[in-house]
Image (cartoon, rainbow, N blue to C red; front, side, top):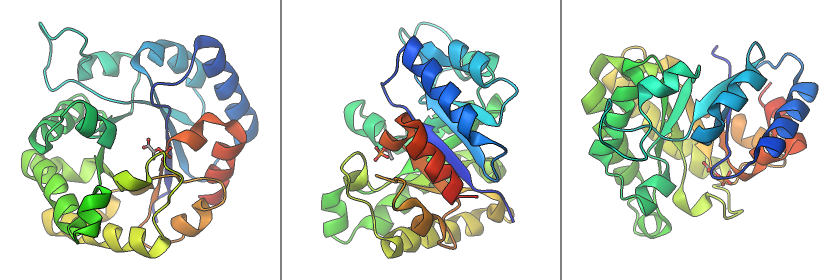
Length: 247
Ligand code: PEP
């Protein structure tokens, strides 16, 4: 059975001093975790965080990657640049990127391709808005978002991670019920199985207000292989407690 994966998404939070304190506190309490652990940090802190997690049980992640390989794209960070800093995971298609930066399914699929080409695992985020859920469109939306990535990446699809993050649950304190989350995960698993004989290797993470109190129940679901954790990843005791729930 594959180990679960708990990935923190710091979003646009942190400072040199806060990052150092957080990572040191995490390492002090981590021991030898039974699950995989990653931190997706702001790009400007990759060098600092790389040196803090180097040789530890924490893998380094980034929060976005350019669709372009290099060139005149001011403000963008390429997958080759991330690779130079030992980045193992990169979020693509986070709902905040889709919402505030108008990222499309096709663009997210290209980002996943760029990451894979540099040996970085894309964590492909999918999820429906509240309006889409209320209109009964959840399955259609998440399947459409994932289909674009499957279509662009062919047999490499077994190398991705997928995070189901209902948009209405991100940063709101509203968590999907275990039944709601498992139901969507089962849909995504079936879609991945139809696309790849190696789909069982793919981690399917749940994200959306996962915290120390609800993690164990969510992580006990058959198709939930880990969590993508925003707010609670910024507090060492909370994040450590979620990691312990996945052990
Ligand atoms: C996220 O940013 O991916 C996320 C799930 O945030 P939160 O845990 O704060 O809802």
